[in-house]
Structures are given as structure tokens and as C-alpha cells.
Image (cartoon, protein in one colour):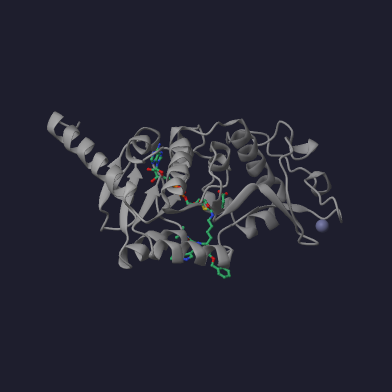
Length: 278
Ligand code: BJW
Ligand code: ZN
């Protein structure tokens, strides 16, 4: 437990960070699953991790799993789509959106890059979000490759009521012709997220890397920084001269051993104190 003296110095550090951010010229915010944890969306790793039928994310978020069982992978993503649609942005998403407005007004270059696929940043009012791992609400046809946005709930009738995360849930495979299909060619659709072994959008990734490497500050929020290439962004920026400020429940998953500010605690409470707003 923090002593009174330590609490005071934590507050002083937050005020110092707040002042430095208002004087910055360029700031990148990089977020991960922890930013949505207070909206009720489970993380993949750490104390807030959720589990879907006992699988780890790397067992299901890969092309091989979709090839083996498109029904199982669609159940997982249907469950996560419905959960995200029902969730509301929390105080952390709002603080980031307000900070963007502040930066715009003050002439500070601002970029938000997220590993999240839930679109809660956009719903909180962030205007331009780079979605490094794309989105739950994009689908791609496995036959004609067309990519479309899709917010249908459920995405197809056969998935209605399916996707229960409990290991005892009904896992009878849904026939492929009843899974989400392409409106153009009737091919099987897949969730258009970045799975393990798949490349991120090269142009977007390099624009984030370039921006990070020229930033005064990189704010690393709610990520275990365990998944590449996103995990390289903050340490590379640090080597290029950016200061890092990290917001996480747990100090052990730091993005670099050279973090200027480590702000421990739920980011829905810490970010509103650290980020300037109008
Ligand atoms: C709070 C909080 C609160 C909680 N407040 N904090 C180099 C070295 C080793 C391996 C590799 C490498 N390069 C590539 C690899 C392989 C692989 C990889 O990184 N593996 C690692 C596991 C080692 N990477 C890839 O395969 C990537 N592709 C690639 O590199 O392609 C190369 C290529 C080039 C050319 C041709 C072909 C290929 C793709 C990675 C895609 C990962 N996608 C996933 C799943 C898909 C989307 C989805 O279904 O969601 O994305 S994995 C999963 O992890 C998801 C997340 O976006 C990602 C990151 O997780 P994140 O956001 O950090 O969440 P958590 O849960 O890990 O952490 C949450 C944190 O929040 C915790 O620290 C908590 O403490 C904290 N927290 N509540 C503040 N309230
Ligand atoms: Zn098609």
C-alpha cells in the first residue's frame, strides 16, 4: 500500500507529466486491451485476462485455426463483436479523445495507434485512429478478397445465441454454408483482424513508427507489449529520443527499462489526471 508521502509524490509526478505533455510538440498514444478493460472487455494477458473455452488467443487467432474450424473461430469473434457492441467507452477512452482536441487546439501533433479491434476509441470521439490489428467490424471474403464494414448483430442467423465462452458451451460446428457469406460472390467471410503470422498494414505501421521516432512523448497505455511488431514501437522511439510514459496496472510488463513515467493503476483513473484537456 502506498504511504501518504508516496501518494503525494505520485500526484506530483502526474502533475509534472501533465505539464510536460502540454508543452510537447508531438505525442503518440499507443493503446492495448487494458484501455478497454474498464468497459468490461477482457484482456488477453495479465490479471484481467479472460478466457474463451480455455483456449489461449494464439491458438485461435491464426489462419490455421480458421482453416481447421471456421465455425469455432466465428463463434469467438461473434462473441467479441456482441460484447464490444454492448460495451461503452470508459473514462480512459474519453480522456484520450479530449487530449486529442487539446492537441489540435494547441498545435501539438497527435497520433493515436491502437492494437484494439473494438472501436471504442472512435465511439469516445477520437477522430483518427490507426487500428494496427484492424477491426472486429471488418470482414474479408476468402474467395474474392473484398473487404467490407459490417455491424450486423448477429452477423448471421446461425451465430445467434452462440459464442458462449464457457468450456461447457455447445460447440457443435455450424455448417460452412450458414456462416457469414459474401454479398457479392457467396464466398466464406473471415473476420478481417490481424492474426498471428499475418502482416500488419505496412504503410500504417511505418507511419506510426516514423511518428513515434519523432515524438517528444510516447504514452503506452494498457498493453503487455508482448506482441510484435507493435511491441517495438515504444522501445524504438525511446532510442530515437522520445520520453516514454506508461500506464498499466502492473509494472512488470513495461515496454522498456527506460520509462520516464510509470503510472500504476487503472487507466480510467490515472489518464484523466495525466492528460491535459481544454
Ligand atoms: C490495464 C488495465 C487497466 C489491464 N488500466 N492497464 C518477433 C519476436 C517474437 C515473435 C514475433 C516477432 N515478430 C513477429 C512475431 C510473431 C508474433 C508475435 O508477436 N508473437 C508474440 C506472442 C511473441 N507476431 C505476429 O505474428 C504479427 N505478425 C507479424 O509479425 O507478421 C510478420 C509477417 C510479415 C510478412 C508476411 C507475413 C508475416 C501479428 C500479430 C497479431 C496479433 N493479433 C492479436 C489477435 C488478433 C486480433 C484479436 O483477435 O484481438 O491481437 S494477439 C492479441 O495480443 C491481440 C492484441 O491486440 C495483442 C496485444 O495484446 P495487448 O493489447 O497488449 O493486451 P494484453 O492482454 O496482452 O495486455 C493488457 C495489459 O493491460 C496488461 O499488461 C494489463 O496489466 C493491463 N491492464 N487492465 C491499465 N484498467
Ligand atoms: Zn466474395
